[in-house]
Length: 404
Image 1 (tube, rainbow, N blue to C red):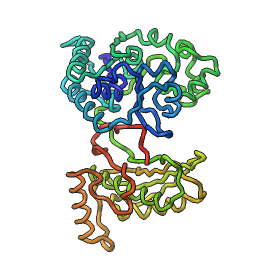
Image 2: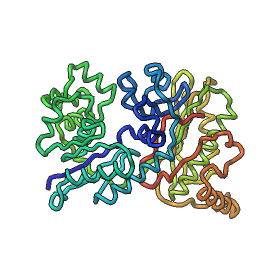
Image 3: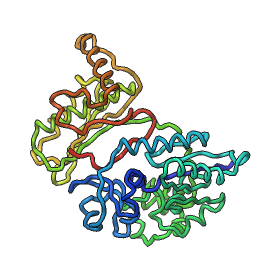
Image 4: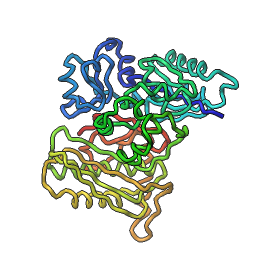
């Protein structure tokens, strides 16, 4: 049976939510993201794109390109609520779906043509989402995830497009190679240096040529350019790591402040591990200096989720890593090698009081929020915290203004 894959994308999602909350923002150039000089554009309205603005751009540059734009910091909790409403509607309509980001979904409609026309069914679902949420939404429908995603991008804004089976290559052929998923700026420049501009040219090349130029990724890009993709729709994605990092509005050399923020980060991530019944066996610390040189160190440890074990090890890593005595722009920590399980007490070092304390603090956090209980040394890190359990199978909310 041939596949039928639907790709759904909420157009300029953060911008659309802000306009729902404030009708005066309609048809005005709008930027959502970090409001400081080091902020990054998380989302931008279509009105700004004619000025060369795009997501991921430094906010300072975006303001220079489009000085009339309204800049909004954004609210992750508000975006999550609107995303959840859309998710519930999709859950009612389709048998299998994958939420790949806060505003992007895949659904497997294979076999539903026996009972419904898949395109008509997807159209009805899109109309319901627009009617009940007020958010613009686009979709693409084809035989695989890659072609459907490209079709969605071609359908935007607020539209829909179906690519019939067998017409994938002709649909992709006239498009720019930059529209192939996985082709970023560096890969695009490499291909342009070879004289490649349209997908059609890649389709006419042997796969081996692409592999010689780009390695294993070249073969993947060649298949995608030819409309070949067998990636399944995955309804649940298991997190393999958990991390957090913060960029300073002003570079700092205050070691006590850096240590306090690392303690707050570690404490919060350890709580997330316990909340998700997870343990980590590998931790790492990252530092980016004012000259943009970035360094990291990692350490393998026995499986744990306990603050009193993780915090000293994170601080030891930081002490060994921070040896240049330069101003620091960014710090972060990351826990990997995650497995399911609960913290096993140490027979000689742990006490019943420590375990009772963890249980009491976690119960308070579950009821009143991540930041309701903090170590005094980490109280300066006011933005450390999360909205949801990171192990609930949903993608994280990514905003571009995690500053301190």
